[in-house]
Amino acid sequence: MLQRVAVVGAGAAGLCTARHILSRPGHFAPPVVFELSENVGGTWCYDERVGKLDNGLPVHSSMYRDLRTNLPKEVMMFPDFPFDPQLSSFLPHQEVQRYLERYCQSHGIEPHIRFNTVVERVKPVVVTAEGEVEERTTWEVTSSDSSGHQKTETFDSVFICSGHYSDPHIPHIPGIENFKGKVLHSHSYRFAEPFTGQSVVVLGAKASGLDISLELANVGAQVTLSHRRPRLTFPLPAGIQQSSSVEAVEDDGRIRFQDGSVTEADVLMFCTGYNFRFKFLDAAQLGLDIQDQMMSPLYRFMVPPAFPSLFFIGICKIICPFPNFNCQVQFALAVLEGSVTLPSRVQMEDEVRRELQEKLERGVQHRHLLILDQDQWEYCNTLARSAGFPLLPPVVRSLYEEVWRQRQIHPKNYRKLNYRLISDLQWELIN
Ligand code: FAD
Image (cartoon, rainbow, N blue to C red):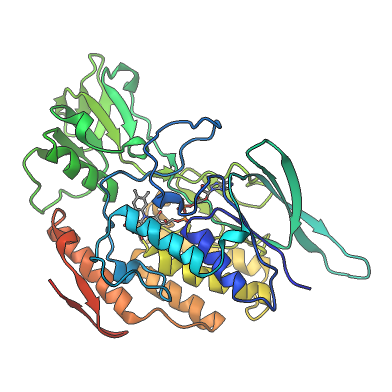
């Protein structure tokens, strides 16, 4: 019998899941993709609105108006689906959205998406069918459409592709209630003009913190880029100064930094990342511990050992997202098809525990345990080897690493470069 798969979300991860399911008609029925908005693309579907929508749901996308990708299209693409070759390497977000729409159309995914349909609950049901000895898990997925009509359906497996850049992580700052200016998170930042002439303390100097600081400085804001990383060594443009992390807000509303200095500011902008939130899951029931920036145990960063027919796609951080999703999905489908056999629950739990322990012993902070970074290539290749699909071409890694190097040296200008892939092994800089 064909397996029925539910996919939560029609962003890049959900589309990739649907695409691979549809290419295996011998094993799977067409998927049911639930998408709470009226569009595909998820993060890449820019929405100028902030806060809650008319339907009571919060805005999902954290995209800002002038964002250009921080990876070149040659590396960002799904390995089997190139971007338009006429485009430059670093793209405005609209081009990524167009790319995902084209991906959806080319693979005939759209008829399988239920738009404006929110997944409210995903619940495992353990059954023993008549005449069978072994227990089997099926999944009840409860969703509601735009007219509020609720429905519960049963699936053999579920892919969670709901993204994790929507629920702002805001660290506690003692005395924050004394701050007299505006407080916002990068999730609600759209463009820089309203901040012209203002003094803005930006907390966090990762991708968004740095990008937004550059945008703000460009329109004449005075930016204090506060972070706990080693001091950035590349030249920052006029209008941006670095400082240590924010320690507290004083009684008079001034911001105090760790080095003891204090400043007044009009705006406090948190670029402090996002929390994992899956309102539709009961983590304890699934044997998962989901904290703000960490969730565990997930075998191969995907599978809760207690429920190996549930898959989380795209949970890792500091990765090359689309190629990573493409590997995870193919591995997960190989598990469902039976061509990959997962270890026992106990073995999977042990392996996850061992891996995390090793990372902690290497000094990795608990909230950074899902960062793959250098390990992402071996991770993808391990999935590919065990499930028997093509490895990522080595050129993806070498160009990705070159771009990271350029980003460290020229954070303002690295996006002006253009690259071309020559072969699976080589790329060249074209201008
Ligand atoms: P999302 O794109 O978030 O999609 C999740 C989908 O699930 C959404 O459509 C949402 O509506 C839907 N959904 C959520 N909950 C439910 C529910 N309960 N029921 C039904 N539907 C639901 N990556 C790059 O490769 N290059 C970049 O340059 C880059 N820049 C980025 C810049 C920003 C500001 C951000 C936030 C991310 C950036 N990323 C970048 C990472 C980006 O998030 C990934 O590339 C990718 O788009 C994530 O896809 P996803 O499908 O996992 O999640």
